Image 1 (cartoon, rainbow, N blue to C red):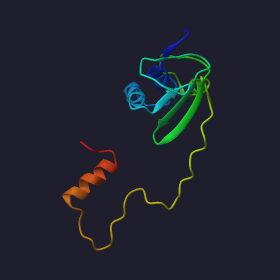
Image 2 (image 1 turned 135 degrees about the horizontal axis):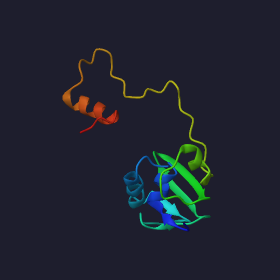
Image 3 (image 1 turned 180 degrees about the vertical axis):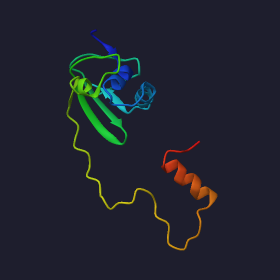
Image 4 (image 1 turned 90 degrees about the vertical axis):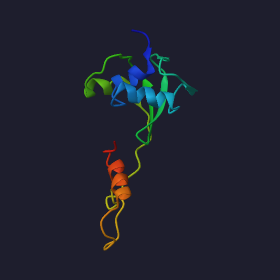
Length: 123
């Protein structure tokens, strides 16, 4: 195999959870190959430099091996050279969700919907 679709490759090397996530990232303009914007069906070959903004983190990888099927994490790491900058340090005391003032009462229906959206339980 000499070349594979960029959305397949991103999913196969576990940079995205699903192929549809990879395709959406490419369509949204968050992925470039060798500095050029690409479409989900664009091909990647060994030596290509892939830059992607995934999960609010900049990922820069160089393709070492092309894959079309998802593989285990240990094998996936061997398929690219990671040149990504280190992720920013997280403040351990930073609240995961917005804090309500004491005595503010129960959350309104709108507040509950926003909380659900933050926690990933939106409908």
